[in-house]
Length: 256
Image (tube, rainbow, N blue to C red; front, side, top):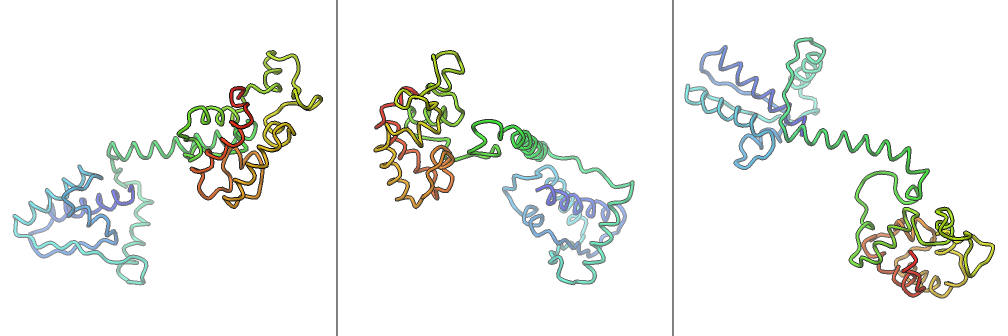
């Protein structure tokens, strides 16, 4: 949208120039930005509204002064000699110290800041996530469909499993809330999230049933990124339902 705003500003400056320096005559202004022309004639344009108002006001004034104006679209990068010359001149003008600064609209500033802050946040996440449990499931701040579920108990349990703050012995032992980190059914094996979901023989039948549900969704891998992040699922919105098979039937949902 910033490039379109720049094109609109160029059209505004062209209209202002002919009004200030030329006598009424027939004038054709060429532009390779079709979107800018659509905005000028649109009755409900929401972008660059202040600039559009200035352009429309100038056009009205010039027409009242008996100017004959034509805003003509020409396709860019198709070998039109005159257009290529103008493009080259425009690039050279960017090196001039007299380039006029285009004040940004509030809405444009908001979008620019949103994009910039999002990139900065993603950059920080890329450095920090690999050292966290969430690093196995996501690498940026984009919205993930698996973050939503209609079953609150399931949603809470899955979120806790993803961030690692669960009621399993390994985590409780680190918090000094359990005497040891071992699984109550597999003495000598730490009750980690991976052990609970992937290995503990106590839940073999539920795990087998869960594998069957994943097979229906054409998912062959049985890993934490698949179970907790929906990696490889064509429709991640469907996958939280299958966790009811394991988490509820294992009767361990209350511990998560």
